[in-house]
Image (tube, rainbow, N blue to C red; front, side, top):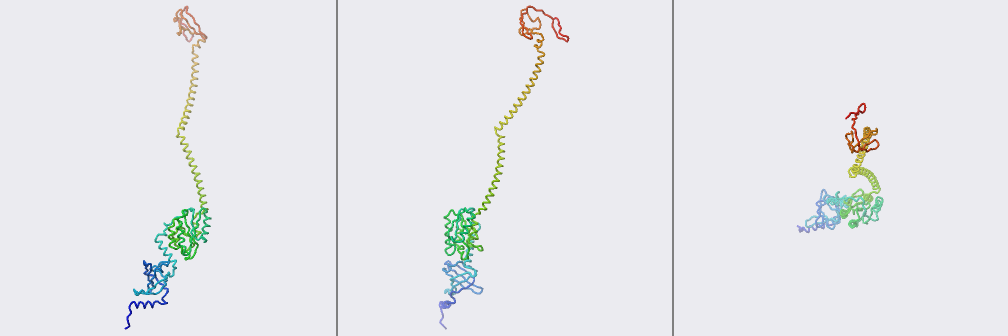
Length: 413
């Protein structure tokens, strides 16, 4: 019987046997299962197909360089070397490189970042901020020598010359691009005049656009104090920056179109507004003028001066009627008086005197008979023309004279 081997010795023999050129730097494809990211930073998982499985280990120094995070169920290509874990007596592959099988690592990393940021709510529509309608200063973060900046400046200058453009140069490709973009976005906090940001570049491959799929850039866009327009020159795919930004424009020129209004459109709008205002104000002025006329008439009808004027007019009309009435009555009275004068003239004693008769008085008493006077009385005789004074020296009583149809006749008294 041969001398037995210890477990450690046997394990060492197996390890030494497995460490050969054929089992070093080998590529293995399979599906990831039982993936575990240890707190130490090491990755542990199993790679399997439909017939077998093998354990995989990726140390922290190698795992930190990955652009994606392995998950159960994805197919990968793993490069590494076979080794033996003496404690458990298991053989496993120590992985130094890991790539998605059939899916680019950059694309997978971007997709995983999208899922993580979406879960945090960074893509929600309600988080998006509206763009200012008439921005006074637009900050443009792009390469100062690329076509993107020329397109933006040209379009904005033609469309709305009132807006100022501040170009902040940034690196848009390569390892230096993410920190350059992050620094420029942070600098916007010190530019209170800036009201909106355009972050853009021309088109390119997924490798060229990797800075816009960087988590640091995505979080800097979300933290920017003003709205950000992502203007990466590709139309068929969305970068992470497109999804986080407040607005995604397919090209830099499209971003310039969306950030400022069209001066010709605004001119047409203002012309229409002015026309409507002129029409509305004309109608309003006409209405107010009619209302003012109504108030003026109303005021005249209610004011004391108007009431006094109306009373004065009424009094004048009443006085005129009185004058007309008095004139008419005076004329009527004059006519009546004239008629009475004629009648009085006919029966007046003076009329009788004019025919040769006279009136004799003693004092104020008219003497009708001789018996009414005494000798020595002074008589006053009124004639038709003049007066005669006499003294009674004698008298003779005679007959009373009476008028009858046959003339005057006398009776002795």
